[in-house]
Length: 267
Image 1 (cartoon, rainbow, N blue to C red):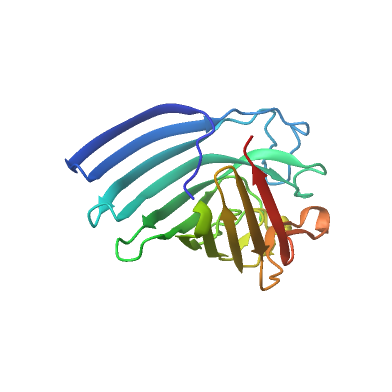
Image 2: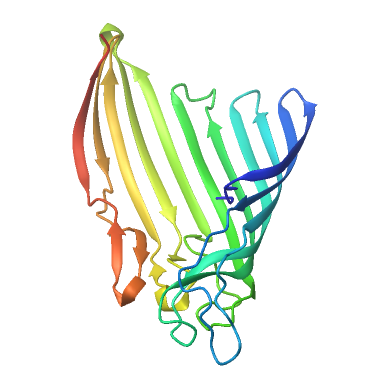
């Protein structure tokens, strides 16, 4: 997904509606994160690098082109955007004993993000009660320049928690039962490609890609509802997060295959 600007300082958007069913837009925005103070400021190495007492802000410049459309006489809604973000003076925390014997922070690198994301909802008139929906994201992230003289940050590495590909798909079908009840069933699938847990090489660990499948089915009345759900049907050992700080592997996994029943009542 496209980067979030921590504190937008400049933002402008132009819209164009070529028809009643389409909107095109272009956005330019800038943002930053505040700087911070460094506890081991002043430490230096033999090459003449000195840990700064104060970090500068890191800045993001984002350019985005997008579209919002209703197609096929309103049966299909298709939205998306393509974006490019440039990150200057990216803040990160480093542990390099050749420089200091404590963790320190620095504006360690510059980086770029190029991406495309889209989502859709399709309700075909030919199949009453059926709704298909989904989304997709493509990311290309790269450290373009290393600013701190350390081997912990490497030019060409991807950014942390930035899978190159993610996607999800759902199909919901509803139909009417006797006594005014409505039944539904919805299988769904989600996929995430591999990514990395950090830009610091000594902490950098690969987060494995995963695919999870689930299903919900239920019945709703005028004031109540009952739904059976089954998540992670294939019992995928999906890695949602990982880090390798202090040479210790820590992994957060998705819940194993889980099923249950949800009940609702509107008073």
